Length: 409
Image 1: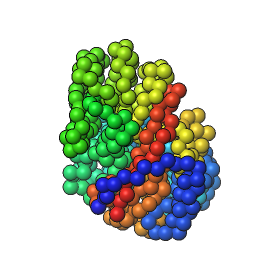
Image 2: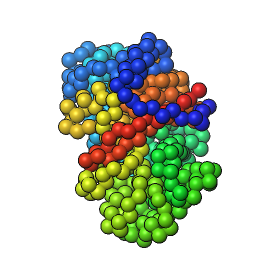
Image 3: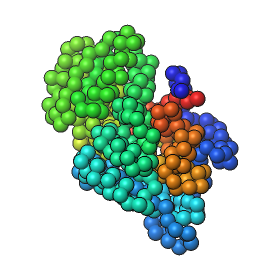
């Protein structure tokens, strides 16, 4: 059961050193931290380098990403990270003496494509687990496939509605929206002290779930607010923004996808509505920053799993290897889903088996596994990630401000 209290920690060099010492002490335990995990310090061996090693067979992990469609830039980053991590693990001896192999499938960026990709994975008798699906709509579409096939699925969709599914085979790698929205609002209230909060949200599943949590938070805490929703794909937000401006909202919370957030960012400036802004993880993603100039988003705040200048050592070491290999820092999707490959390798080693029930049981026993955005601990709803990073947009990039972590018993 999770505690309601939140720890707010600035990751200074001193604190990072303490956490590295703690991480090192966990490596001898039986609840996580595979030897080739994100904090191992292993150099990226590069594509194909594991072929020289001698392995007794293969262990295949299925991976499903948006390699085509609207999310292709993020999806290709996921695919790159999955393979890089597999190469790293193989350079350190593989898993149970076997070569770790990533079997990629393209979701085409749609729920229908996600179903097709998942069906291809579970019909492959060599696939022992699946990683993927950053959109909640995709997760909801494929969850029953994982259950029927009894194949563990480690997913990225953040909608709280996924927790309502009766499914022992799905494990969330990103913090759930209810957790993230409440942390966002905790930060907004503490730092902006709004007398009236304006909320702009998409009326798709992602935005509606976020707004539902925000609405309950405001009512529970007697926070005055004005909210306005819009359909996904909207291009004109002038009336939505003016509604909040005319109502006297002195701070704003935005919860939508990259393209909508970019347009809102630009049109807010055109309307000269200069109040503090806090947004979801879509802000600062490559698609968002490609649609606006750096000065348009300068100083805006948000919450995500990745940000530059984060000195959490597992992240910094991984980011260095990823940037060397691909010429850019790992994006939010990579920081959310990449650790699933490390964790699956660790779970298979702990279980001594690739049987699905053994993997699921090892996942449920995971505690304090060092990932790219903090420690992973499995709770009773099979949510693993209870960490989020506050960032500030600076020169078109996310800059680390603070790490929020929720304690889990």
